[in-house]
Image (cartoon, rainbow, N blue to C red):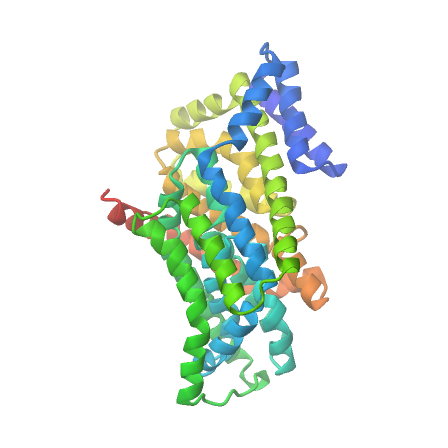
Length: 433
């Protein structure tokens, strides 16, 4: 059988297993075993054991459970409620009023949680009831939250960046630096989108009173704890004081200290946050283990090498490659979650990326943007499910509300392609080239 036939067979087997409801990590593992057994002469036993160990034992992965646990702690605290009350007087004067709280609060929580779904859930738990109670149109409230929640993957620390960095052997710290400028720019584009949408529906928006000086001062004071936590986590990385793993530990201690100061640290919060972190980390670990076995099988078969050689010989341009790859990722986003998309494709795509001269660091930020788009793409957009659980709205209606923000994400991809320095300037500057 040709390499193309083998590739199609393995892809078909994978989607067949997923269609029958097999867990994505287990499906990847089974397809990898099938590839080794049927199409190579390599002994599966020792090779699979090595792949399982190497794919889940990297030092950089130690940051993953710590960041996830920190997010679980903050999710179960009432920090988001305080943040809403603090941001409200600071943002009420903008066109769109308190809709901007969805974007700014998501930006701030993204810088300490690292997960898109967790950011959406944490912010939406308090902003959605308040916005709807005040009379903001449901399409704007739900759509802005769906779009802004995706910032949880782009603004560091990011679970997706850690997974990509480990699989692609790219510095996680440099990936964190690379996500800052695109993340801030995307947040500003989301706010601009809110302004434009608000102008079209100006008569339906409640008129917020201008805040007094004491209210503004109280708002700044309420935002300060989150800013300090961001400074502890990201500042320690950017200043070279701590590695991402050490920064994750610092952030976790800071999250517990913050909840203790606010008198919210209870035995129940500790236990539930720990169990939540164990469940999430175990799920990601199973996916990484399955991807490790599948990557090993494809390496023995020679599919990545053949694709890289084809890309180099055919003279395909980076722009054309990114265009068609974006279409592939959009389609995958209809069926798979973000982490599954990364681990399923990166071992095949990365050799091609290197063969045509693309920077793996830049490609990591591009990939995160495409994963963000998958978060609000029906029928398996995780952010859509989160908002559905919060608001009880139809899934496809929420997707329709988020269409303008999907357009902004595609615009951000185009800007990143046109200006690669958006992702590479900061890490190049801060690490001396």
